[in-house]
Length: 138
Image 1 (spheres, rainbow, N blue to C red):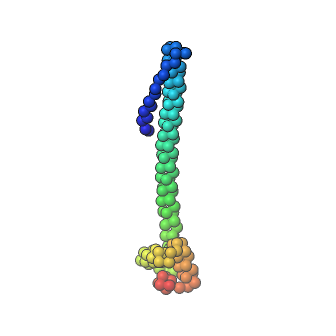
Image 2: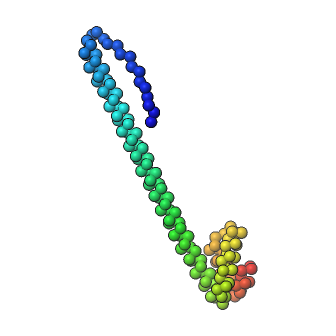
Image 3: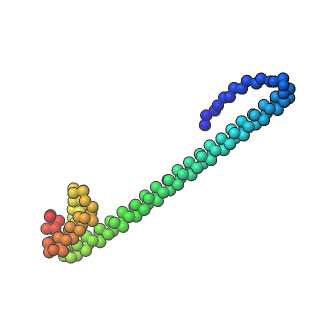
């Protein structure tokens, strides 16, 4: 907040008398003080609301990160199960599974496709009777 300096020039009127002028000045200064207090309360409430909003945003972001990590683990487990089924259907051993993972990852990056899409193609090739080596090279 900024500090403000207010300069006031006081002219006492003889009509009100010196005490009447001071009483009127006092009420006006009281009004200014009340408005300043109200302004300060509003600024404080806005600052608190802003802080609460930032905490809420941080909480939502944290939740989304955790949720995304959970989805990533679930998707990886699903892909791993599918590649295990492909290896079983093609009578390939566990040694081929690591090669299948590398090939699916590399093809997904090279062709800008999802790993699910590449796995679908690999699954279709093995289901049509090709060996794992033929399907991976294709």
